[in-house]
Length: 258
Image (cartoon, rainbow, N blue to C red; front, side, top):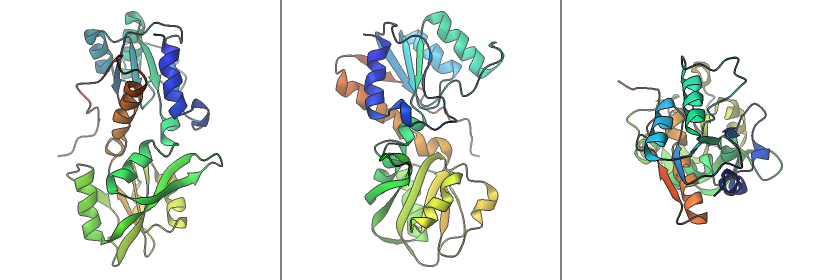
C-alpha cells in the first residue's frame, strides 16, 4: 500500500482544503508514493513517537498536531521538531497530520466532545459556508445547574481539575465547545445562545464573563485526544486487515498537574 492511499481515506473524512490558513495539515515528511506496511498513530509527533514507530516497524505516522507548523531555518537534533524530522527521514517514515482539517468537520474533534456530553441538535458553531467550520453547539438532554454541569464535564472527560469562570446562578441548557485553543470563538459561543462554552487555552481576561454566560477550560490535550481513536477507526474500517496501531504512550500532554 502507498502513503497516498492512506491519505485519500483521511482526506475523504477531513479534506485538506478546509484547514485554516495558518495551519500545516497534510504530509510533512515523505512522499505520497512511499510504500506503507504499518501505521502508528498519536496526538503529537514527538521524537519518542518516532522511536516507537521505528521499534514496531511502522513506516508511517499519523497525528493530529502537525510536526512542522512553520518554515524551519535549520534542522538539528537540538530541538524536538528537528530530532523527530531527522529520525523519521533516516528511518524512511512518512508523517501526516490531520489538524484543523479534522477540527472543522462535525464528526471530528468538537463533534466528539459534544457526543461525550450527549448534546442534541448539534451544529457547527462558526460555519465557513461549506457545511464545515470550527466548534459546535448543541442542547443538553435536560437543563443542569453549574455544579451539576461541572461534575458531568469532569466525569465525561476524565478530568481531575478544570478552570471555570464564575458559576451561573441559573441552569445550563445550551452548550458550545471547541477542541484545542478556542479563545477566538467565545463571541460566537455567546451569539449562539449557549450559556456555557467549553474549550482549552483560554486566557485570563476571558474568564471575566458577562451575566448569563460561563466558560470552562478543560485543557488542550484533554479536549482533542479522542480524534486519535476517530482516525484509527477510519483507517481500520477502510483497510480491515492493515496493520495500524495507536501509540502505547498516548499521553503526550506536555502539561503536568500537581
